[in-house]
Image (cartoon, rainbow, N blue to C red; front, side):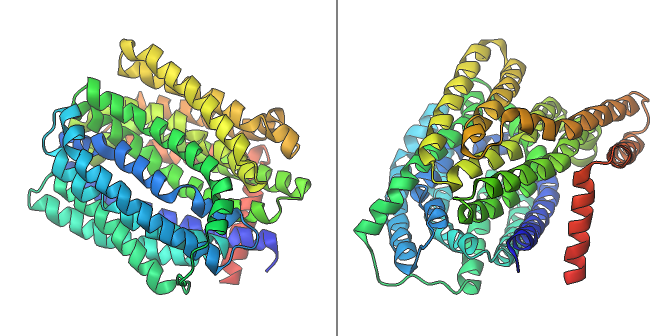
Length: 479
């Protein structure tokens, strides 16, 4: 199979995996939201940043270094495997003994036990990260499909059963832990790679020379993405944090499908073409045009129907989450643009530029957070929207020189989908002003929004629409 078809078919498998998992998680999250309280979600949200940072340390950017390395062999993979497991155990011990201090920081005694149990995902995730790197490197994205769906289904049963039993926050803990365990076991059974008895200090140094910059970048990104939860949990109530986390979950369900697919498939393909400037530009452009054509209307539509959707799915007790849904829709709409630009930079081996960009963006973002914090939650959200726009410009800036793809060109590529999505959003919001039954309102909004966007794309002859339809037909014919 030639490279473009290989990319598309693996992208479709990755997207199918993410859609299947997110659909199940979406249904489960609705059930759990009805059984649990905002405070239960808030308690888990309080420790998310600590678990996430430990995971980044455990993986150390080495998985991506393996994917980027042109001739990575079993010695490379085995070296990273043993290092990741050993270091993750050390990190878990640190988390275990730090748990009482974190619980004291938030004045939530229950967090001590929660951290010690949920922290086990760090060790399991270290094993999983090497498996995932191998699947990415060898472009076997079907493996992700079965592993992710297996983990999602089993963890869904466990989480709902425990919630029905009235176990509160432990239902969420068990769900996450089970998901990671099953995912790792299925990959272990379906992927042929096994570590050999080899550990090379020289290979480790070579991989780490690339990976440490991605480690620092991931630390900055992870800490920044979770800092709002940290601040809200400290200065506001656990219920407020629950509303915030629930608000960002809806747009995340959509964005993770497309962004994860792009992230996983685009990086190894771009890495193969790291010395071909024109190919890199063409693939990066295709990723941005296609992803924004899908993501912009999805985010605009979700923001427009946020209120009736929340009432129908979560009940009125979750209505304070609606503004957070809308703010997060704007923020996450630009994620695929960030991803495509950053993957191109990583693929050509410039992890040094990647790190510099992360530092600049996070300094701007944290400064914005500090400035807006005294003015309340909504001011913080507006500040984050502003940071998103600036980050988009910063990520794109180096690619004008590196691959010949300027930000001006990127804006021109994104603008048609952005303008059509904005027009569609305005029309959908207008439907909401009719004060109809909540079910009828959302049904009409979805039909009108989808119709307006598809008709507009057809009327103005969006090339991307024809490209997606043609690709889908090719996939169906092949199957």
